[in-house]
Structure formats: structure tokens, C-alpha cells
Length: 244
Length: 244
Image 1 (cartoon, rainbow over the protein chains, first blue to last red):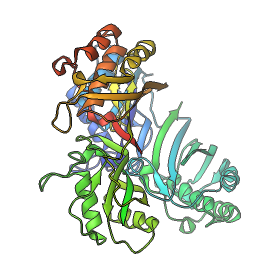
Image 2 (cartoon, helix red, strand yellow; image 1 turned 30 degrees about the vertical axis):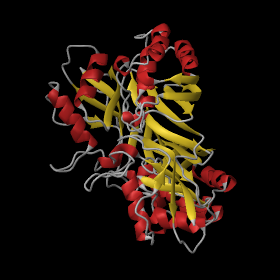
Image 3 (spheres, rainbow over the protein chains, first blue to last red; image 1 turned 60 degrees about the vertical axis):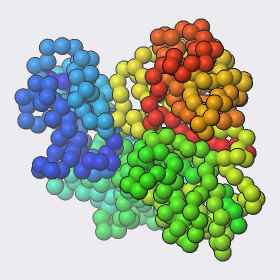
Image 4 (cartoon, chains in turn brown, orange; image 1 turned 180 degrees about the vertical axis):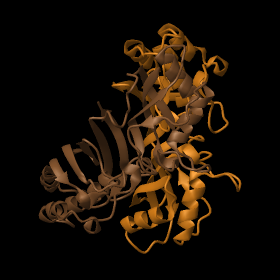
């Protein structure tokens, strides 16, 4: 039976999602270790996305084949009992035999959290980026409109499959502010390597007035990775949901 | 000049607030180290409360004497530049010459965070306690009413000054639920050692039906530490504010 699981993780102490050589702690490595301890005989699980070192996940989706003899809920409990504190399985369902979390995904949603204020806050820093300068909501809204739709986003990332296809379709790009917390929601059919952190790095410069909205829109048009402003830090980013 | 500072910290990697022998990492130790690096010659700072190992702070208040020649805002920036990522100073003001953050405090507010749901969540565990069973808001509200006012809370803690005075006045005791997140707010003139974690440990048992509200009210009346149910974990607790 193929199972589909939704996985949450605190990326702080991981070298990214994807399994690497021994000695590198990865989310996939922890998940495969836990699966192995409950009788899984596979060699590699399938995952929807390969998040970077330090990036968090709330709605990562994985799949694996397992001859589990109990309920999916019992599988969730068994996995959570085996996983370390910074990884948890939110739910498991039975999937179609050829389900693949990456190839079947229709869209992904990421959320990037910024907190704005004069001083850094020890209780915020693990899951958000501290920005000192005030942010201009109107400028951010105009810039976001430029992201929506089908564009060549070559300025903001590279093809994760080492090809050259940098065209993606963005369905939602929006900042939502609540007090000092600013969250950037972005949904697309798929993302380029480092795309969200590149876009947020540029957008925060729009919000603080370092870049004009015109210059931001010209950056999209440029399709030139070398023109991309510095990346936003990994710790503010979270893979929120994968849609099928 | 005496300064009063508001301090925020993630208690996870500390053995509590109060300085201990060398080799024990404490919030006070980090603060005194940072002060020393910006020219402070004191031997010990004053603090409003001594939070336990693993307990967080958002509104801890400290005071210290320092012949600082710049503005209080510059002192905030200088301290934050010297402090580790898990401690930050939110603000500094000039204080009266005899201000003492502990003896002058009129009241303290703590907040305890619980998240309720079938599975633990990797992104919640650092700052909240996971409770599987549903919580009964009405039972919790009745139990909280029993806490409010002037009572001998001997069941729920010991005198932090190694005396025998276990009478305290609770001004607010209230659970606020938002989705799966439940926050318990408690304000009192002062707290006993381990009082909030003891109260929350008992209240969660009321919320899940393990203890009746009548039994909870009888526990207060008993004034007997040996009858206290197990403590709630430290990681859900945060010293939110000290009032003067």
C-alpha cells in the first residue's frame, strides 16, 4: 500500500530536507530512519519539495510504500513516537498506487515571516526575519501584482532540475500585516531553486524604499540572476502547503 | 545612573534566569557578560523574577547602575549587539536611583500556552505544551474563578524566599482559546516557586476531565503541596510582563 503523509519540521537544526551523505542531518534522513524502525523496507521516500537548509515545513508531503497492518492513524502515532522533537507527522492517508507527491502536485504555498521593529526579539528570531525599517504596504502590494501570472522568473532562481526552464505561474503573492508581524504568502505551480527567498529579499527592499516598485518590476523583466538582490534568510521561510 | 531594561529570552537552552556557578548557562550570566563588555563595573544586576530552567521571558525587567554616556536607545543597541541570539533587550529607560525591579513590582503576568490536537507539532513544541485530549472551556472558566482573589496557594508552590508565606493575590486567571491554541493568562501580586506550572498542571487535568472543578477547588482549600498534580512542562511558560 502507498501512503501519503503530511510532515511538519523545524528546519533550524537540519541541512535541508533532502538526504545527503552520512554525517549530514536531514529531514528525509530522520523520516527514513523512523520508517525503518517500524518495518519499512524501502530505500528512499518520495517528497513534494526539497527545502533548503534552515527552511521550515508545515505542509511538506511525502509518500512511501509500506505493508502496514494497522490503521493510518496508528501509523501516524508510530512515526511520531520514532521521530525527533523537530519533525512530526501531521497525518497519513492511503494513496493511489502511482501517487507521487512531487509530480502530482498542482501547486505549492510558501509563507515567509518578517517582524518589523527597532530591536531584534529573542522569541521571534527562530521563525522570522527581523527588519528594522518600516515597511510600505502600498509599495509591496504594487510589487506583488507584478509577480502574479505566468512569467520567466530567471532573476529569482534557477531550475531545480538543472535544466533551463525558469517559467513559473504564480497564483497568489500577498503580504498580510498584523501588528509588527508581516507574512508574505506565495502560491505557484512550482518554484525555482531559492525563488521565495530571492523574491522576499527584493520585496523587503521595495518595502523599505531601497528599491522602487518600477525597479522591482524591471528586475522581473530582466530575467538575469546576477541582478537579484541578496536572499532573505532561510529561517523566515516555511513550506506551508502542497495542493493536489 | 540606574537603568531599567525589559528583557526577552528563549529559555530552552538556559538553566534558568538566575546566575549560578561557572559552567551553567543562565540568562543573568549572559546579560552580565554583555554589560561587562560595554563597560559596566557592577557585580550583579537586579531582576524582577527568577524564572526556572526552560521558562521563557517576554517582559522580564532588570536594573543596573552604569555610567553610560550615550542615550538609552544606544544602550539597547549596544547590549543587543553583545547578547546571544536567544536573549534580547526590548527597551531601556532611566530609572529612579533606588528603583528595584523586584521590590517595586506591583504585579506580574505569566502566560502559559497549550496546543490541543491528536498529534504533536514540530513547529509548536518549543513554546507550548501538547495536550491530546479536548479541553472543556466551561470547566476551565469555573476553576479559574476559584483562583482569583487572596488565597493561601500552598498546594501550588513554596515561598521563593525560603519562608512560609504562601498567601498571594491573583488578579486575573483566564484561558483564551483560538483554534487549537489555548493560552492561560495569570496575573498576581507575586508568585510562589513553581506556582504557574503547578496551577496549569492541575487546570489541564480539569479541562480534560481527569479532575472535577470541585476537586480543583478543594485542592486550593487543602493548602497541601503533596496533593498537587504533576507540573506542566516549563517550555509552555513565559513571563509576559511585570507591572509597576
